[in-house]
Structure formats: C-alpha cells, structure tokens
Amino acid sequence: MGTVIAGPREEALPELPEVEMTRRHLESVLVGRVFESVEVNHLRTARHNSSPDEVSSRLTRRRVIDVGRHGKFLEVHLDDGQTMVAHLGMSGRWSVTDEEEIPHTHFVARLDDGSVVKFIDPRTFGFVAVYDEEDIAMSGLSRLGPDAWANPPTVDDLARRLEGRKAPIKALLLDQRPVSGLGNIYADEALHLSGIHPLTPGGDLGHDDLERLLAGVRQVLDAAIANGGTTLDDLAYLLPDGRAGENMARLRVYGRQEEPCLECGTPIERLVVRARSTHFCPTCQPAP
Image (cartoon, rainbow, N blue to C red):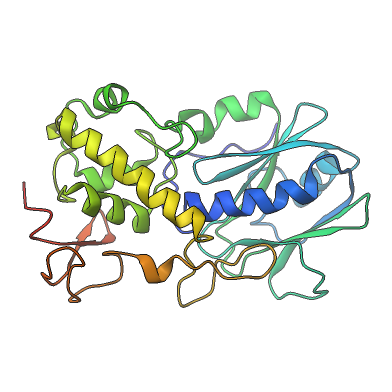
C-alpha cells in the first residue's frame, strides 16, 4: 500500500480550471493506451508511494480506462482497478508535445502508440501516485468536498457544510472540504461576483448569500475553462500542448490591488487570510 495523502488542504495553483484543461488534453492521449514504460526520476514526485520504482511498476503494462478529476486532483483509472492520482502543486504541468528535453521533467511515460507524456515540476510540490481502492479510502481524497464545477453542492448542502463555522469564508473555500477545486484566484473572483466580503464567517451566510456564491463560482469557473485557464507571469502553468491559458486578462480582482473595481471604480484592496493574499472591493463586498 502506498503512502497516503495527509489531508485535503491543497491550496496552491493551478486550480480547478487549469486541472480540467489538463485533464481534457491527457484524456485525448491516454484513454485506451497502455503504459509501455514509465520513468520517475525524483523522490518527491513519487513521495505518496514507497518509491519511484513502485509508481513505475504499478503503471507499466496497464491500460488507461478513463481520465477523471476531483477538485485539483487528476484521476487516471487503470484496467486493474488502480488509479494514478496526480496533483500539479505550484509549478507542475503535463506535456504531450514532441519536445525531447524539458528541464525539471520528473516523470516520463511512453505509450503503446509511441506517444510520450511528461510531468514537469520545477518546485516539486506536485506528485504522481498510483493507488488501489484501500489507499484512496485512507487518503485525503476521501475527505474532499463535492467538485465545485462538475458536481457542485446545492445551496442546502453547502449551508450544512458551513453551519456553525466561524472561519472566514475565504479560508473555508480554500479548505477543500466544503467544496473542492477553488484556490486563491477563483475564490477571490467568486466572492467579488457574489458581493461577499472574504472575512465573513462561513456560518453567517444565509440562503441568498450562498445562492449568489454558488452562481459566482460557476460563472468564474466556466469563464476560466473557456479561456484555457489562468497563466500568470511566471508561466508555471501551461497547457499540455505548450500554450498559455488566456484568462488572466479577464480577472476582476485577483492581482489588481489599487486598480479600480470594474463594477464601481473603487480601488481594489488586499488583505491576508490564513497566510493567503486576498483581493476584494470594499464597496461591492462590504465588511461583515
């Protein structure tokens, strides 16, 4: 049995839209294909299994049934019932291009049709693991909340998950247990769209607040996915075909400190919530 993921608090970029775009690209390459060989050359990349060799041996000669996603986690389901789970961390990305050498490549899979799939991760916060059903049940994956885009909670369900919670709603959105897939960018964007201050205690939100919040989450995720995700200036996130996401220019508050709010013109402010930079409009999102 592999080493399980410690918990569901995966807050780093990339977020749900970037992982969804990655999933779609990998799905087109992996489904129906067999892993002819797998090389893992960094211990941290394989840290949720016992060794890089265990990742390689569990994948080799296995056929891919489908490629799924839950929150920020990729789930590649194999023909023997195991699942390859991958997280991009802060700097990870997958590549399906023909480029032979890419720096910081820590995982290389050669498929039975000659395709080559690589995982590149300069900071090594990401990982690739292969789990059986028991591993998954013991991991943080089993404690993730409903997917914010593919299977969002209802207003009543989210209300139950937030009932009595005094923590700021921004922190709860990053927690991944009430709802999974949101990180710093899209939590800020959704809170702005819904007119909710990021420091509002989660348990204080009423039915109308949560209805607006869920609608805001859907709107920002739909837009980000349509635009290929958000690639920041560091270019850490790229699509598997090497292209950058185009959503950055469409962000409403994230990274726009002191710039005018697109709704009311008030300068965007920044505060820190649980060690995370948070952007909001003090007029559109009045303090609780």
